[in-house]
Image (cartoon, rainbow, N blue to C red; front, side, top):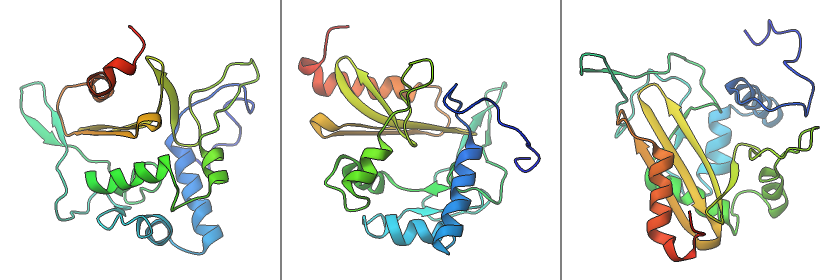
Length: 207
C-alpha cells in the first residue's frame, strides 16, 4: 500500500499527521544501514545494553511468548474476544513486547545519564517541530513533550486491539509512570495524570 503511494499528503512542515507507516519505513532504513534485522539491532544496541533482558521485538502478533498478557476486546453482549494485530511484519510501529521493570529501565535512560544514545542524539530526539504557520508541535521524534499543571512531562501512549497503555516520565522529579490495560474501559492518560497529582500535588499549578 505504501509503495502504491506516488505523492505526499501535504508539503513538509505544513501539517503533522501520526502514522504507523513512518515507523515501518524507519525500521527498514535501520535494517539496510546496520546490516542487521530490526529485531537483532534493537537487542544488541538497545535492550541488552540497558539490561532489558525480557524485552524483544516480535514481528508476528500471532506468536505466543511466556508471560505475555492476552488482549481483550469487549463485545456488545458483555463477552470478550482476543485482540490481535493481524500482521507478520510488525516493526517499529508496535512490535515490542516488554515488562514493567524493563520499561522502567528505558525511562531511566531517557531521563539520563544515557547508557544508550548520546546527549546530542537525545536532544535531537526531544526537539519538537515548528510548522510553517508558526505553531509548535508537541510531538518530537517518537515522544510527546507537554506541560501538565506547570511541570514538564515526556510521554507516549499506545493503543492496540484490546489494549491501551501510557508511559510517562516527569524528568524534573524523576517520577516514572507506566499504566497498561488489556480491555478495561478506562483512560490511561487520565489515570497517569491522577498519579502525578497524588505524587506531586504541592508542586503543581492550580487547576
